[in-house]
Length: 146
Image (cartoon, rainbow, N blue to C red; front, side, top):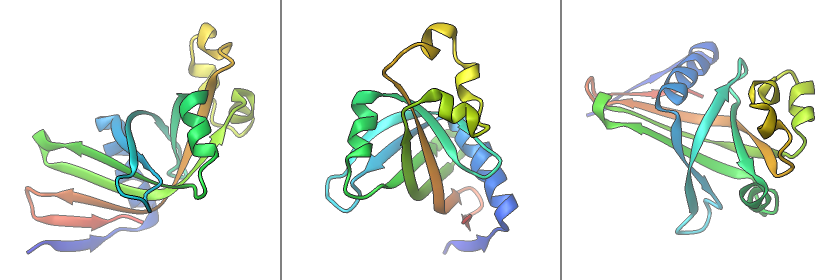
């Protein structure tokens, strides 16, 4: 039997940040109302203080998100060696202008190499979590984060 523990928002954001930045690669699932959903691996660039998860992408993938009927996204992180599993549902937004991301205080574009910053196909994806579950199967606990 799995025990469920609910966390305060600040603790939940810290847990998401710790796990997402440690594992780094997630399965980024879009069009989750259709089976099979469109899924691809994506590298987490940053988890900000509000719990938003930031990704870098090229226009070809970002356009797919921008033209979805619904912006619902599911992220799945797994690190079997430590029995850490994180599933997060929320909404994704494509930000095509890297300067807009800088103006919003994220500063991701500043961290890129100069040649990446000049890439016209580079876009940001901001994922805003709404619900998250973390499983620690060693202790048999599931944490409901958000």
